[in-house]
Amino acid sequence: MANLHVYNNQLSTLPALPTGLSFLNASDNPFILFPALPAQIDTLHVINTGFTSLPSPLPSTITSLSFGNPGFIVPPVLPAGLLQLVIYESDLSVLPLFPSTLEVIDLRRNHLITTVPQLPTGLFLFSSIDNDGLQTLPPIPSTVRRLYATMGSFTSIPELPDTLDFCYMDNNPLLTCLPKLTKIGYFSFQNTAVNCIPNYGQVTQSIPPLSSLPVCDIFNSNACDFYLNIAGKVYADNNSNCIDEPGESVSNP
Image 1 (tube, one colour):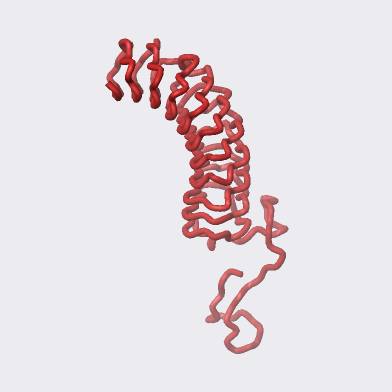
Image 2 (cartoon, rainbow, N blue to C red):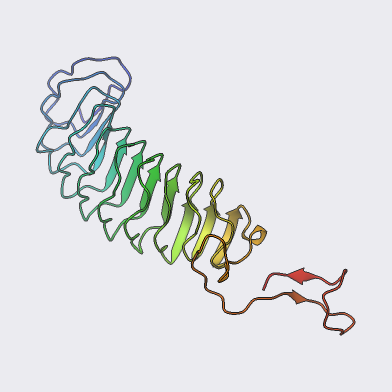
C-alpha cells in the first residue's frame, strides 16, 4: 500500500503503518498516539487531531507536511528537504525554522504566534491568514509569486517582490500604508485603513481600484512613504485658457 486516506473517520488510534507507505492523510481524527512512520513516507497530513507534537525525528523523506490543532504546542524540527508546509490552528507560540528548500508556506489561524522566521529564498507562495498576533512579516523573497497576508493585525507589509501573480492584504484594520507597488496581476486590500497609495505600479486588477484613492504625498494623514515629487491634473484644455473647466476630461497623473 502506497497511499492511505483515513480522513474524518473519528479514529482514536492507528494500526502499524505499512512499510511501503508514501502518503498518509489522517486529518480530522481524535488521535493521541502516533504510530511509527515508514522510513520513506513523503506526504503527511495530520490537521485537527489530538496531537500536541509530531514524532521526532520526522522521516527525512517528507516533502509535504500539514499539521496543527488546538493543544499542539511543540514546534517540530522540519525535514531538510521539505517543499510544502501547512500549519493550521495550532497553539504554537514559536514557529519552527523553515528549511531552505520550502516552496509553499501556508499559516492559518495560529493565534499565538507573533513572529515569522526568515523565509526561504526559493519560496513561491507565502500565506498568512487569520494569524491575528502577527503585526509584520520578514523580508519577502524575490521568488514569491503569490502572497496572502489577510485577516491579521498587520501594521506594515515589507517590500514586495518585483512580480506577483496574486497579492491579498484584505481585512487588516490596522494596516494604514501599502508598500511600494510593483508588477501585480491581481491585488486586493479591502477592509484596511489605507487612504492613499504609494504609487500605481503595474497592477492589472485591483480591489478597491487604485484610481479610487489619491497617491500619497508629503502631507498624507497616515505618514506613509511617498514616491512622487510632482503632482497635478492632466486635462484637455479645449479653449486654451489654462483652467480645468467642466467638460474637459481629467485623468490622474
